[in-house]
Amino acid sequence: MRLKNRTSNVPVERTVARIEYALVSAGASNIVKDYEDGILKGIRFTVRERERIIAVKLPAKVEAVKAIMQEGMKRPRAGTLKRLEEQASRTAWKLVQDWIEVQVSMIAMGQAEFLQVFLPYVWDGHRTIFDIMKEQQFKALPGKVEKP
Image (tube, rainbow, N blue to C red):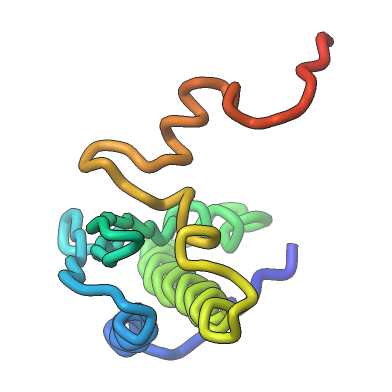
């Protein structure tokens, strides 16, 4: 699989600063960064939309990126794994940045509304809308269910 930003050298901190800038330009406030064992795992923020304050939670799935990058490696050394983890983090966050900048551009051009693009990531404090729909086996989606 060809992975965009696979060789990014941009530090995560700089990428996250650009993400914050893009989110603020789209109306976000109260931006919070979630860390686990010193590793940035996600960003949460709020936005005023249709007379409501809406919370949004955006993850960067570093482990998923690392797994793709690790494909085909037989027995990587400890130093290689450490560098791979760092690269996976840079790549994952750069992908989030690219996605957010495109979505914010679509909103600015009137091609999409904020909730239209960020709805799956709307967060109730425990789960995202996508998580809720997945738990309910996407029953709220239109269309017929085919039996296997």
